[in-house]
Length: 392
Ligand SMILES: Cc1ncc(COP(=O)(O)O)c(C=O)c1O
Image 1 (cartoon, rainbow, N blue to C red):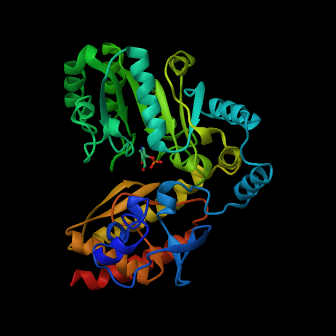
Image 2: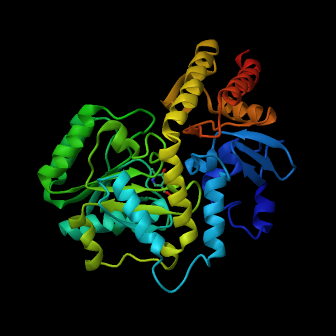
């Protein structure tokens, strides 16, 4: 969309989700690419021109069962027919909390919110309440809210309470946490950033936060119900003080969770964390149905299988097109190609879309329970066809 037409639009900045913008997905000025969608089902999406695509963005990782998964859609529809929201806390709120605590025992008690950013802000608030300290170190993307952003409009005073921690660098992490010492309220980190976490780095985060009396917050917004039902903590054996869940937990319905020990979560009564629609029960019903399917169908095992097939295929493409591709990032469950040049990544994403595949040109592509061997094989063929003309 040109600058002029975007200024005329009633929608500021093209769309409310930055990562869905065409210039992000395909590059500035890309032509004949899908701009807006009408519907999705399974691992497929239909754009406003009626064209069909196999999708690897999966609602930016918010969908692990597949779009419109029948059991989840039916549970949500029933909750909507039951009113969806009301003046009292819904029974489902306690039921879903208990189910999360059963499946993810390090989330002994939880609070519900709507977005990952909100739940991360709640975790940081709880850490500040527990420690009486302000400083937070972060590692990864934790949402758009002020506490972790350096964007325009964030007060310098807020920014001064936040620092970055390098991923997988045990020695620097140790030094930074020690230097922060008794000013440090929390370390917040994602378990996977392009690479899986090193055991030594994880051990340093755990030991050093405990040593200075800071709270260790694991941001599982992308990884819960994907790397395992219990996310990266379950996969890599991490035991955080607080954990934040989002995205796939309700298969695309708006729900996020902050959880941890009862002692840390008791901080909710000493501060103010509350939102009108945190207790709407359409999303809670979707989460209950999602968690049920996750366990019943062992969805993470399926995602690891089809993701493994995709990952292996991406490595073959790397070997075949070394002048275009420099490597493969991520893990089988969340992966991407790394390119020699940004213009090539744009050409690949555009070429793949022209062949009916929505494939992200940077972190991450996500497989789901709806992707199968045949779909992934077809995708690898479409990527190969898109790469061949770029390799000349
Ligand atoms: C690891 C992580 N944390 C937090 C967020 C923010 O979540 P939301 O966009 O739901 O606010 C994201 C979103 O991509 C994320 O990937």
